[in-house]
Image (cartoon, rainbow, N blue to C red; front, side, top):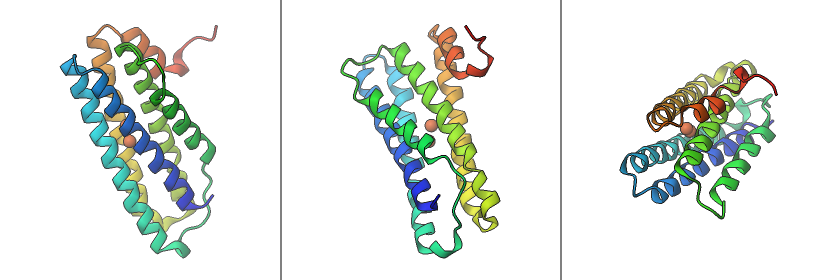
Length: 172
Ligand SMILES: [Fe+2]
Ligand SMILES: [Fe+2]
């Protein structure tokens, strides 16, 4: 998979998440704590998008240095589609639903960045790119913790745990 295609898909996810959180910030204006949380997440996703844009520029200028990658591009694009669906929902979500969706997306986002560490095996010259991906991954871990804390505080904990720890859930 071409490095630029992967980076553009990641850039899209970061941008779409930033927009989704910005709309949640507007929808929950009457709840200052919720609005502040989504405002911070939105600004940070925009910063992630800018970091990925920088990497796109770098990779574009050094195209020959980058080999094809083993990355599941469709999974990254699938996440972008899910975020779009949430953003285009006709009925605004309740705060609990929004927090639950955000937890789901942050879990996915962190996993996608982690998967991108495969890039390192493909090309040892990509150290700076990998550092960038790792810092994006840990930023999303921080987003997850903020959302989990907020969910616990508002009594959404059961829902939050269900979403953020899917592998621990017993199968029906
Ligand atoms: Fe992000
Ligand atoms: Fe995030």
